[in-house]
Length: 416
Length: 122
Image (tube, rainbow over all chains, first blue to last red; front, side, top):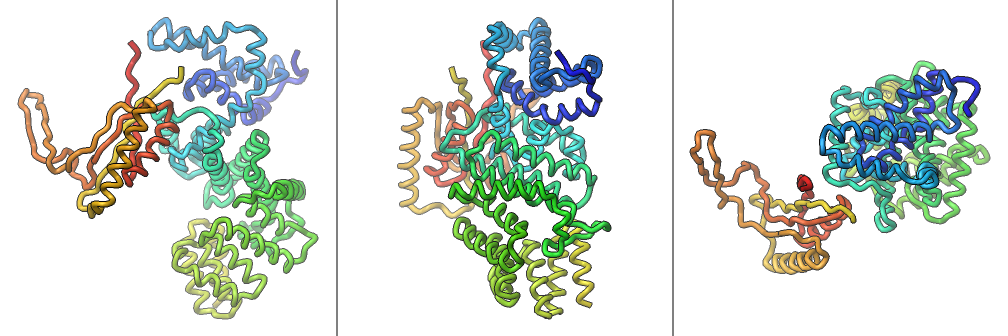
């Protein structure tokens, strides 16, 4: 019936992380209410913490949690229904449970669609981006409110309020619990991808806070991207996002020195890159680009795949990166893409040419830190020290990230 | 079977903004009229109307002591005032947002979507 070795508390916690989103998503569909679903799943995990160490892990822990949560929710509704009349819902749910064992098995079977529904609900454009991120981490990632608050450097009460408000809006405004129709899908999928990317970026570039929490955010974003690819394998941009996250995450050991200072991509020890993640990311890039429907995440992933390609020399890499940015500029002609292209151009055709391209973007990107950092670097390489120093100062003014600040300050100091 | 909710789609006017040209007004009226007819044909229509400028509004306040206080002018002392609205029935927020997008195109301005409280079942 069950595993011979009882799981430790951390084993249960691992199951919690892996199964929480799936269980909550199934319970929301069943109960039609996010708060009730969360309570029921929490309760089921409490029962699991008591029982599993004694009886061992059930064969399918996720299904066990879902079934237990559902039974608890029904019990609760039954109790409350006898007290108040307002829980008329209970009767409907009780009716729904008096189905045949076959029907119930089908219901507990592949409910992977529920997670997709939940993801689209959490990333609905009627919710502010910060609320989307918080909800996604809470409901799909199973992170505690305190953990999310720590990761985003806001007081726990603020984060709790943000979550309560978002859930109230979903319920009150009638945000649907479903995967969008074909016609709306491209826009809505972009919202989901952007949210997952935001989660990753928060972990990757956060300026302060607990390093472990930040690595947790990156891992969670990777997990969500994997879930999305598993559920929507035919969406090349979803594959592109997963590849981008993998190729970026692969460099985590090489991007800072022991003292925490930043190491630029070109100066990184490539031996420290996670080769498993690099290989998986590169394979995904090849797979999605073959579909011939390039989008921003795929191109960004391809740029990172080129940087990770050991069969090319530095010059060849930059030539390919430049070609990719040319493609992206045709698809999405934004100043930020043009800046990325200009940086690649500087590596291919020299700092002078790159600088001229960047100068054309000074007006639209006046408040964009990377423009000043890139300009400062090119001016430094052209030995125009005074101008470089003033650009480093401009970049510093726009930098909140401590690691980046330290890097820019050291460059500024080197100018003398 | 699909549950319907009611939403207020409101159009806000900014005081002192340059009024649109006569031609634009005519297009707007025609487009809004077409949109209204579509709402009625689709069964989404509950009510709609455009309002006269807010400066001719009157606020009436019943006081705890039974007296009624009447003041000239709008309730909110802001530059933005409700200019008109639709009350529509929609299956969910996505359906309401789709209607609002059509409404926004027709009246050439932003439309705020706000759900009504659910009426308790009898």
